[in-house]
Each structure stands twice: as C-alpha cells, then as structure tokens.
Image (cartoon, rainbow, N blue to C red; front, side):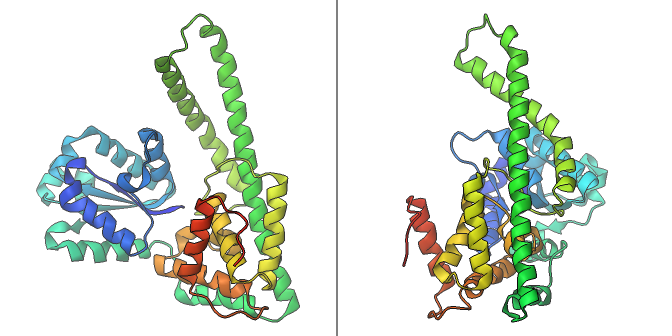
Length: 348
C-alpha cells in the first residue's frame, strides 16, 4: 500500500474540517490520499480516485449533511465498502455535524458502525484516527528493532541470507512490473484491433480520442482485476506490498539496482549513496522500498517507524566505512533536490 489512508468527503466540508484534518495528518508524516495533495493538472479524476482507493490501507469517510446530498462521495463510499467486504480494508467513519439518527435514516449499516464523533473536538478526531490507523496490522517497534539489528550481525551466513532476501524481493517486483506492462500492452493491442474497423470512417477529433481513452481505461480496469490476484501468487508477493508499475524495468537498470543492493548489504556503500538507493527505489521506480530492503511492506509501519527504517538505511549502508554520521533528513533532501533537477551523478 502506498497510502496510509484515503479521505472521502464532500467538497463543501473542505475548508472547515477536511483540509485541517488532512494537513495535520500529513504534518505527522502519514501518507494521505487527499485530492488537494494527490491530483495534478490533467489527471483523470476517476482513475486517480480508483488508484487512491485501491492503494490506501484505510478508508476514512467524513459523513455530513453535505456528504449525503452528493452522488460522487457516496460512490466512493460504495467502493470502500466493497473493498472492506472483499479484501478486509478498514473503514473509519467520522460524523461531522450529523447525529446517529440522521446517519441511520440514510444508512442503518453506517449508523451501527463505531464512528469518531467530530463534536468532541478536532484534537479528539485526530488522536482517535491516528490510534485506529496505527492498530491496522502494524509491526511493533521491537520487531523493527530486530529487523535492523540483523544487519549488524557479523555472522557470514546471516549476512548472506539478508543479501539474498533483498535481491529476491527486488526481483519479484521487477518480474511483476514487467509482466504488468506486457499485459497492458496486450489489452491495448486487442482493443485497438477491435476498434480499427469501426472507427475507420470516423473523424478522430479530441472528443473522440477522449472517449476512446475512457473506454480503453475501463477495459483495462476490468481485465486487469483477475490478473492482479494471479500475479501476487505467481510472483510470490505477500499482501500489503505496494505495487504501482510506472513502466518496464530494463535489464540494465535491474542489474544496476542489484549491484547496489549487494553493496548496501555489505555496508560499503556509504550514507550518501545509500540515500540515493532509497530515493531511486521509492521515487524513481515507485516501488515498495521497505519491502525490498527490509522485507517489511510500507503499509505495516507507522510514520514514526517509517522514519526509523529510512534513517537506518544510511547506518546499514555505511557500517563498514569510516564516515562522520550525517543528519539523515538533510541528506535525503539533498538527494531529492538533485534528482528532481535531473542530476543522477552527484557525489558529495
């Protein structure tokens, strides 16, 4: 999962309640799918929301008089409810300016669900929401301490096992990403072939192109769902691993990451290049970096634990070299800035 939570709400409730809530959660390092944060100009609203729903561990629904008057938020609620039934996604309602009787009049099922009552105050909502999110199948601090400590074990066989695990986890994602792209290409080719005769005499204007894109997206969504289930089994990928292919991973790129993973596991990489490795896994490949490096899916850690593991990346990758400890946040921000400016060769 890429996002800790998805917030479903009516736009009329943004200013007074939802905006401050999303900002406060983001400030506390939660990964929030919220339209103001996640959507860029030109993004497809429907496809972006579908992606946010699928890749969020928890669904938060702000129920209000405005919510019950709008069609789109209720469609999001229907999707979240279906995902909860089918896949165990947690659904957390927040009652904003509504009573239990008003909720029951619209949905008895929602009224029967334990909810966070906004009338008790903003701080109450924030603390309860964080408590509920953190209780969703998370690792304990002790478990993560043990995960990191294993890298400092001097036993040769233990180190070899960790190295093989990292390489194996990365290989699983490479295989999945490339198979995903291959399947998408097959669907597109079949779709274009079926449409070619029907559209031979049609004017290919912007409106027609947009309609074809929407039809193709719906075809992909429908045909990819059964593929996802089989792919996790075929590539031996555990549940909750974040998967969002951003394109094929070439053999050359895969070999480069493999060699860097070996160097990182050996502790000879140094802090700076360790930060580069984390950035490239997380941002460039958009992969579940914590799963690759530690065998722990992103979803299973809290924001504080995520910070702990990310900081440990630098310590693990430099444990065999003599370096002055760097401030991890500053180091990672330096990498991020240089990568965003297109500099992929930036030694200290």
